[in-house]
Image 1 (cartoon, rainbow, N blue to C red):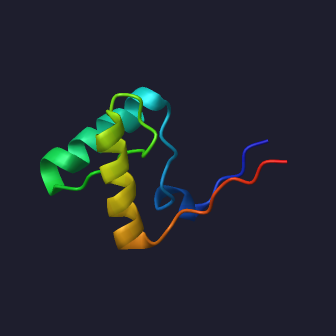
Image 2: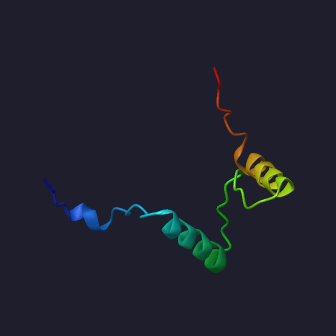
Length: 69
């Protein structure tokens, strides 16, 4: 069952897939200078991932570590 609402047009839609997310990130960088990158992105070298982590920690605080066990 589908419910219709007048608020539907102002609700942001969810990105469809990884390709669409990548397109959105690329456009944000090129148009606004905004960078969205994962600290675990395998395309980055270790020093690049470390730099991303350091920038994130400086701007937003330390990440919560996953607990094992």
